[in-house]
Image 1 (tube, one colour):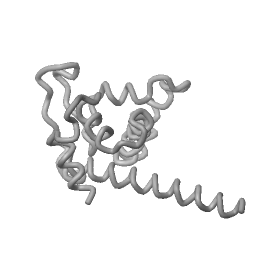
Image 2 (tube, helix red, strand yellow):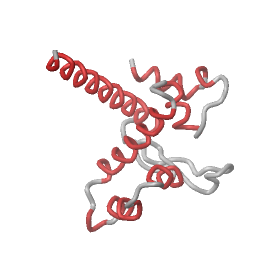
Image 3 (cartoon, helix red, strand yellow):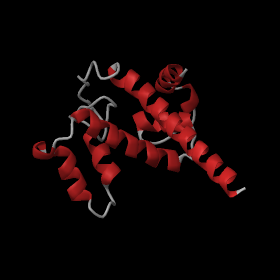
Image 4 (cartoon, rainbow, N blue to C red):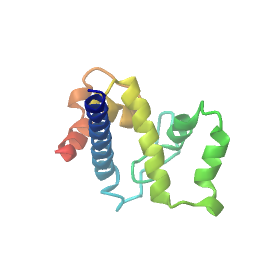
Length: 143
Protein backbone atom coordinates (compact mmCIF):
# COMPACT_ATOMS: atom_id res chain seq x y z
CA UNK A 1 0.00 0.00 0.00
CA UNK A 2 2.81 2.41 0.90
CA UNK A 3 4.63 1.62 -2.34
CA UNK A 4 1.47 2.31 -4.31
CA UNK A 5 0.98 5.65 -2.55
CA UNK A 6 4.61 6.68 -3.12
CA UNK A 7 4.38 5.65 -6.78
CA UNK A 8 1.20 7.71 -7.21
CA UNK A 9 2.83 10.76 -5.55
CA UNK A 10 5.92 10.40 -7.76
CA UNK A 11 3.80 10.13 -10.91
CA UNK A 12 1.76 13.16 -9.83
CA UNK A 13 4.96 15.17 -9.28
CA UNK A 14 6.27 14.15 -12.70
CA UNK A 15 2.99 15.24 -14.33
CA UNK A 16 3.20 18.63 -12.59
CA UNK A 17 6.81 19.06 -13.75
CA UNK A 18 5.80 18.01 -17.26
CA UNK A 19 3.02 20.62 -17.29
CA UNK A 20 5.41 23.31 -16.01
CA UNK A 21 7.91 22.52 -18.79
CA UNK A 22 5.13 22.62 -21.39
CA UNK A 23 3.90 26.01 -20.13
CA UNK A 24 7.43 27.44 -20.03
CA UNK A 25 8.05 26.14 -23.57
CA UNK A 26 4.83 27.80 -24.76
CA UNK A 27 5.83 31.10 -23.10
CA UNK A 28 9.27 30.83 -24.67
CA UNK A 29 7.66 30.30 -28.08
CA UNK A 30 5.52 33.44 -27.72
CA UNK A 31 8.22 35.62 -26.16
CA UNK A 32 11.17 34.77 -28.39
CA UNK A 33 10.22 32.15 -30.97
CA UNK A 34 12.14 29.51 -28.99
CA UNK A 35 15.09 31.80 -28.26
CA UNK A 36 15.52 32.81 -31.89
CA UNK A 37 14.51 36.44 -31.34
CA UNK A 38 15.98 37.91 -28.18
CA UNK A 39 15.45 41.54 -29.14
CA UNK A 40 12.68 42.81 -26.89
CA UNK A 41 11.11 46.27 -27.13
CA UNK A 42 12.01 48.96 -24.61
CA UNK A 43 9.00 49.78 -22.44
CA UNK A 44 7.71 53.33 -22.87
CA UNK A 45 5.55 53.53 -19.74
CA UNK A 46 4.76 51.83 -16.47
CA UNK A 47 7.09 50.47 -13.80
CA UNK A 48 9.44 49.06 -16.43
CA UNK A 49 9.75 52.32 -18.40
CA UNK A 50 13.11 52.50 -20.17
CA UNK A 51 13.83 48.78 -19.72
CA UNK A 52 13.56 45.88 -22.11
CA UNK A 53 12.79 42.28 -21.31
CA UNK A 54 15.70 39.87 -21.50
CA UNK A 55 16.16 36.25 -22.43
CA UNK A 56 14.02 33.59 -23.99
CA UNK A 57 11.14 34.06 -21.55
CA UNK A 58 10.89 37.84 -21.86
CA UNK A 59 11.60 38.59 -18.21
CA UNK A 60 11.96 42.17 -17.04
CA UNK A 61 14.99 43.07 -14.87
CA UNK A 62 12.77 44.14 -11.95
CA UNK A 63 10.84 40.88 -12.19
CA UNK A 64 14.06 38.89 -12.03
CA UNK A 65 15.11 40.76 -8.91
CA UNK A 66 11.68 40.18 -7.36
CA UNK A 67 11.91 36.45 -8.06
CA UNK A 68 14.96 36.19 -5.85
CA UNK A 69 13.87 38.64 -3.15
CA UNK A 70 13.45 37.01 0.22
CA UNK A 71 15.97 34.24 -0.30
CA UNK A 72 18.48 34.11 2.53
CA UNK A 73 21.43 34.14 0.12
CA UNK A 74 19.78 36.44 -2.47
CA UNK A 75 22.93 38.38 -3.28
CA UNK A 76 24.95 35.17 -3.72
CA UNK A 77 22.33 33.70 -6.06
CA UNK A 78 22.08 36.86 -8.16
CA UNK A 79 25.86 37.16 -8.32
CA UNK A 80 26.32 33.51 -9.30
CA UNK A 81 23.87 33.75 -12.18
CA UNK A 82 25.26 37.01 -13.51
CA UNK A 83 28.97 36.51 -12.79
CA UNK A 84 30.78 35.84 -16.05
CA UNK A 85 33.49 33.84 -14.24
CA UNK A 86 30.85 31.39 -13.01
CA UNK A 87 28.88 31.54 -16.22
CA UNK A 88 26.75 28.40 -16.58
CA UNK A 89 25.31 29.28 -19.93
CA UNK A 90 22.74 31.96 -20.48
CA UNK A 91 20.02 29.48 -21.41
CA UNK A 92 20.51 27.55 -18.15
CA UNK A 93 20.30 30.77 -16.15
CA UNK A 94 17.30 31.97 -18.13
CA UNK A 95 15.46 28.69 -17.53
CA UNK A 96 16.34 28.66 -13.82
CA UNK A 97 14.89 32.14 -13.34
CA UNK A 98 11.80 31.36 -15.42
CA UNK A 99 11.28 28.12 -13.53
CA UNK A 100 11.46 29.89 -10.17
CA UNK A 101 9.00 32.57 -11.34
CA UNK A 102 6.65 29.86 -12.60
CA UNK A 103 6.79 28.12 -9.21
CA UNK A 104 5.92 31.36 -7.41
CA UNK A 105 3.01 32.09 -9.75
CA UNK A 106 1.84 28.47 -9.61
CA UNK A 107 1.69 28.66 -5.83
CA UNK A 108 -0.05 32.06 -5.86
CA UNK A 109 -2.68 31.02 -8.41
CA UNK A 110 -3.02 27.41 -7.21
CA UNK A 111 -2.15 25.84 -10.54
CA UNK A 112 -4.48 27.97 -12.69
CA UNK A 113 -2.47 28.01 -15.91
CA UNK A 114 -4.32 30.93 -17.49
CA UNK A 115 -3.76 33.09 -14.41
CA UNK A 116 -0.08 32.13 -14.38
CA UNK A 117 0.30 33.06 -18.05
CA UNK A 118 -1.58 36.36 -17.72
CA UNK A 119 0.45 37.30 -14.67
CA UNK A 120 3.67 36.43 -16.54
CA UNK A 121 2.98 39.33 -18.88
CA UNK A 122 1.06 41.73 -16.65
CA UNK A 123 2.24 41.08 -13.10
CA UNK A 124 -1.19 40.52 -11.60
CA UNK A 125 -4.51 39.06 -12.66
CA UNK A 126 -7.46 41.24 -13.65
CA UNK A 127 -11.00 40.45 -14.72
CA UNK A 128 -11.18 39.11 -18.26
CA UNK A 129 -7.71 37.53 -18.16
CA UNK A 130 -9.01 34.35 -19.84
CA UNK A 131 -9.63 36.21 -23.10
CA UNK A 132 -6.42 38.26 -23.17
CA UNK A 133 -4.45 37.94 -26.42
CA UNK A 134 -1.30 36.77 -24.59
CA UNK A 135 -3.16 34.03 -22.71
CA UNK A 136 -4.73 32.82 -25.95
CA UNK A 137 -1.38 32.71 -27.78
CA UNK A 138 0.41 30.83 -25.01
CA UNK A 139 -2.49 28.42 -24.53
CA UNK A 140 -2.56 27.71 -28.28
CA UNK A 141 1.15 26.83 -28.07
CA UNK A 142 0.40 24.35 -25.27
CA UNK A 143 -1.61 22.13 -27.60
